[in-house]
Structures are given as C-alpha cells and as structure tokens.
Amino acid sequence: MFLQISATLYQVGTKTGYAILIIRSNSDGLMEKLKFLFCVILCIFVSLTNAQADRRTLSIAVGWDKPPYVMSDAQSGYEIEVISDVLTILGYEAKFIPIPYGRSYDILFNSRFDAVTTLSHKVKIEGVYLSSVYIEYQNVAISRRALNANIDKISDLAKYSLVAFQNAHRVLGFEFGEMTLSHKQYLEVPDQARQVRLLLTGKMQVIVMDINIFRYLHNQIIPQAEQQAVTIHPVFPINGYRMGFSNEALNDEFNEAFAIYRKTKQFLRLQQKYNLHNQLGAAQISKD
Image 1: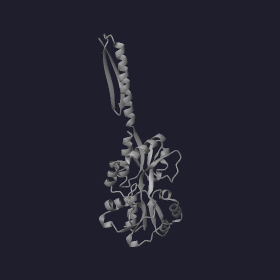
Image 2: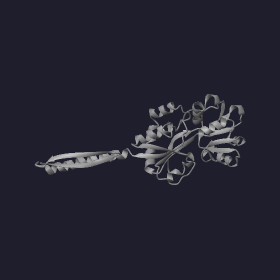
Image 3: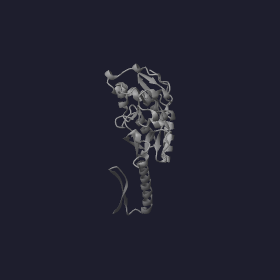
Image 4: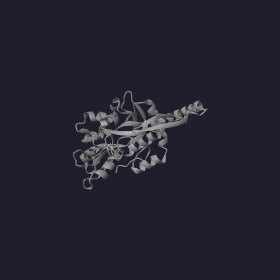
C-alpha cells in the first residue's frame, strides 16, 4: 500500500504544472519524508512563482509609427528594441500598444498601461515617474532647397508656413511654443510621412521633425521621383526623452538596467543597424 500526494504548483498561460509524489506508507520514516517532501514542494513553488512574476508582461503605450524609432504598428524599430532589451534584463516582456502621440501625456491616467514612451521633462504630469533619458531626438527645421529659406534661429520660422509633429508646441521649448501661438500658418499632424509629403509637394514651406525620421521617410517611403534637395536648419537643441511609469519602483529598476545596457555592444549595434545620428552623444549634423 502507498500514499500518493498530488499538488498543483503553478499555472502560466494555458499550461499547468503538477508534482505527483509517491511515498510508501510502510516506511518507518514516513513523517520525516513528508517533512522533506513539503520543503521540496515549497522551494519549487516559490521558484516557479518568482519565474512567473519575472515574466510579467508590461503594457506600454507608444506613439504611432515614426521610423526608424517605431515601425510596423509598434512591433519593431530602434526605440522598441531598446526598451525591450532593457525590460528583458529586468525579466519583463513588453506589450507595445500604439496611440496618437498627442495622447501620450494623459494616457497613464488609464490603468491599462504600465508605462508610456517618449515623454519630455518639459511637460509636467502628476503621478507619473519619469525615467532618465533613454533616447535623443534631434529636431530640425527642413525646407526645400529651391525655397532658399533663411532660417538661422527659431524666430525665423515665423516667416514661413510650418507643419510640425503633435505636441511640438509643448516639447520644443518656450520660444517655439510662443511663436506657434501667433503663427497663422502653423499645423501639427500625427502622421509624419504626411509632413514630408506636404513639404515636397510645396503645400507647406517648412517642416519640423527629427532628422533621423526625415531621412528614413525621404529615402525609403517617398518615391524616388518625388524626392527633392532639401536644406536642414539645426535651430533646435537635442531633446532627450524619457519613459513615464505609473510605478516608482519600476521606474528605478528601468534606470538601473538602462545605465548598464547603454554601455553594451548591443546598444551600439542597434544604433548602427538603424543608421542613427545624434544618438546619446553622436556627432552633430550638417545642414546638407
């Protein structure tokens, strides 16, 4: 005769693990064996519970596609890979959910999300913990070379019809924000490919966007026949962007992991893979 003990230890997704333990009842040391067995079960249970917690999925709101940073409905791109790599170090998986960039500063009030990408410290949000800078955008003004625009400072932009990305008036500094208030031909759009098309078709004279996004869209999305010579006007400083977390401890963990990750070869390879310029200390861009 024997005693069979069966215990459900864990459940991950649709898979459930079981421990089936058999002890013969005629053993003199039955109680000792049961005590030992209990310790084994407890250790396995704790281990599996921790493993399950380590694999917890975080819901992360990310702006609409802005290649090469975010592509394929937020499933690929430089920024997506950086965040995924850092969270993997911490034992998390990231589920990226695309949203209009204009909603980024309000979205953490929705409990569906654990974090939001690409936030500026210039915009204050209550109850949101901002990470250290994990990505840099080099926003510039861009005109068609045929326009022969004279743009050396932000105030010069007031002379031209202008289209920027969503929330540009909030994140590009006080001077730019003030200029847009009185600008009668200023527009912000969520689709940055549309910005490039508005420029190249002559419907708008100047666009404001990140230089890496422009180069990607101009070279890979805009047909060769529509491409034109342009002039880059570097009137903005580099903007560092941060993650926004609803949980302070998670924010601290991200900062510690990113500080390690940015020193790795993987981080350098990602910048080379996407041919990025001005990413956390790269050389300054030229006007051409």
